[in-house]
Length: 254
Length: 297
Figure 1 (cartoon, chains in turn green, red):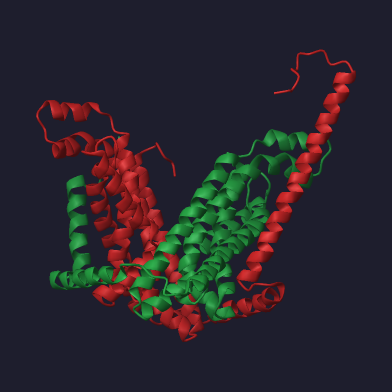
Figure 2 (cartoon, each protein chain N blue to C red):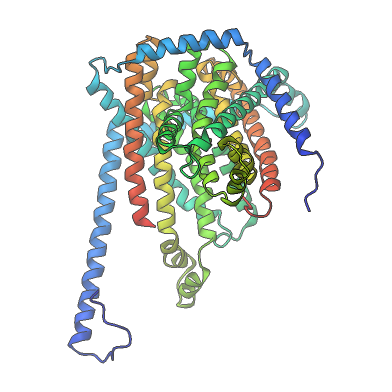
């Protein structure tokens, strides 16, 4: 059945040797580990009890800005992805070369991490949430366009053919024959990406792209560990609330 | 529901008129709901724009700046001197390749250590096999905390505790991986057949032996497959760990961006993209061989 070039035990042994080499290369000496763990324990002690440092209104505002960044980035990506996805779907766009080009472009956009995009956009348009919105939107255009076009290709073609048979134009066939079929699927995917983007947005501030991450990296720099713990808990609470709400909406869509 | 059945005789009459009206009303209500949703979305977009300080002016001002920035990162490549131009573009290739190898190594160590810890904890976390429900609950909360905190936050804290370098990066990946894979592995174990477990128990095997010889052989293909998938994700994550001083190629990228070494930015970003794509491809093939024809993705 399956061709085995390397026997599993040899593969395991190779993997283990690579792990040891990696640990050596990463300088994971036992003494360093023990010292670090001791320091880590001390940090955890300093984190208790978490404290807002009297800046709760400011932190809540940063949290809202984070949500706004994620929301705008997701909406922008979805709005741009929709027409692109139709151009990249085999059952809509007959030109193979254009489809191929679009798909490689999407691969490139989503192959680069949000944080790298944030770094580049902060450098291009300056510090602040605007760079964050762009950093969320750009890789998501790659990811959402790909998912959208796959959903469009999976749509039942008979409805589009019916519109054509009734005398509709190609555009009308897409609008009334395909879009109604795929809309719920696409909406579900957008919501899912919004959830994930809320997580990403919460750390974008570390490279200067605004939101709660900025407050977090400030507190880290000042070694205010009780406030660090407080902000991390705030982020976790926000992510939890958004996940629950989004999951409820997605269940209603399905 | 109040809908009349299709078999009912449909001659035009008071009934049909009523249906017609109800249809019309439903259509109108649907349209009004659509308008409401669009207005709500629009209001949310405006509010978000206000909160994140994004407006039309900024967008119009920003787009040409981005285009200009991207244009500057493109290297001068002429057909006559292509070799020399490429050489100049990737002038630091040797050092960059070492950093990329480091990045992949960080991802590998983080994935293997994290997956190992996840596997150890997953038996106690699965409700079907855990020795006690209280233990399962506790382990599941630990895993949840480990995967909810972003990798970069762990990395920032670990850099402070362990010092700069790739070690805190790999540890941050390991903790996050433990949380993410631990949950998946527990779910995989729950799908295992109980027959082999009962057989080991009947032969006098301890709980650990039941897990090792009854459950693990059944779960192993999925465990490895999910581990490979996580490795692909971790390579991406590892490429940005350097932004907070946790090693790998990200550190070089951060330096280059801050110094506005435009051409180096495109060189590095393309190198990262190539590495990620290559490792995705290799892992994808491996996964397909492990899971066979079951999951084509």
